[in-house]
Image 1 (cartoon, rainbow, N blue to C red):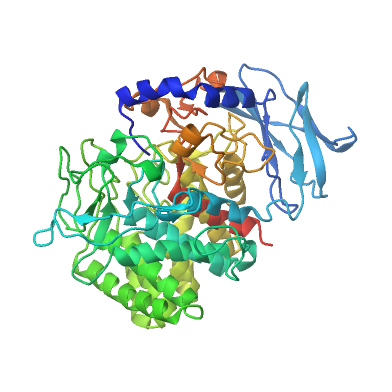
Image 2: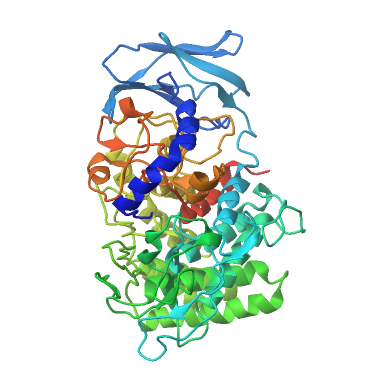
Length: 595
């Protein structure tokens, strides 16, 4: 989510010939039957989608073994109208096929890529997003095998402590720039912890705490979450100082590897980066300011991550868990004292995380504190905040500001329901039902895509799948099961481009080979596990500064509709992996791929 200066993009264009050749070789699948490239669980809905770029009749389909033996069909297709570049779409429902195996789908003269059905097709994949998160580490970075950003940071925009050095090395870079936000980092840490708590058997142990290869007796997901928590502790050093951001968009002047980062914030190239505190008022040191109104959106996220961390790490590290516990209580109290949204700070550009909601964050903080302390007052507070944050406003909407309703799904409803009474669970699940129904109403197309295609649409799609999953598990109601599976399928290939939106998943799939990531561009390093930003409205793409494709568009014929995607490092709007999206995906995959 970086804005590259147009001049910089022009200079770097010449350096991409080799990576362009690799991406060109990857190309685009020739077929127009889109399937989930990972596969389908036997008891899950199974729908492939035909994307026809010109009107054509596709009346029937069948499923055959790789040897060509028919095992399902012929069955009628369902004409689902136009969507994006697809002049016509057809849904091919083969849910009734439950026998594990490897198949292909045929519809007229079209044939799909290999389709896998089996109970273990997702196994082991929950660890994949952790690969990307390790690559994003500040402090010791196992990919570069060195410590990066060692001089962080210097407090800015504070009435009494501006100019003070505070050690804040660690955590994760947010995307392919090196900015670090509590907003996304605390959410990511919570989701990693939550994934381990809910599905511990989905994760392995192949890395040490510092991210280097080698088992250490601790699941890798906990090692990664602890790395994030340690940085969050540094960002909340005491009750009088809650920090929200490390760095600003002056970072974007250089497109370089972390060990060579040459950004200059006024203290010399490669020097300290600014630490922005929560102030509760509009903030921004350079040309632009945000619209911050309080601390609570950040404080609630701090409280939630600390509380769940204290709960899950107590047996492994009691001293650290005790620190997390005390900071969780203090952070929540600070959120109550300063209600409102704490947005990130812009710099030279009018670009920042425009988070407007905060009651959902305080709900999550209260629910997590109830899980830790069993103090019923926190559960009551969680239910109270829930009533003010019933439905995420993007659900059913056509658009939203950048990160306006973050996190994309209300995690607090699920956490409060876990410890709630029957009446509370019914109320909280009802909020989910209202939001899901609004999305379902929008999803009247062949792909059942009902989200707004704003920046980070893949993160929204992941959150939609998680919300529907939680609703189904809380209530036993399957009315949104198709919507849930359609969101999962979209992310792994059932989209107009036939692209898996998680780099490297599956290993033999069609995924981004030229993502907007400096390590890919400079070192030709093949990333794994990163969730891409994803398709955006063509109107957004056309109006973003600094985008310049570096090669002919391999997906040009699928980029003629209202949404676009490019596998080109020059397009930061659709092809950049994001850290918080990786954590969100790790949580979803933990449910799909239990070991």
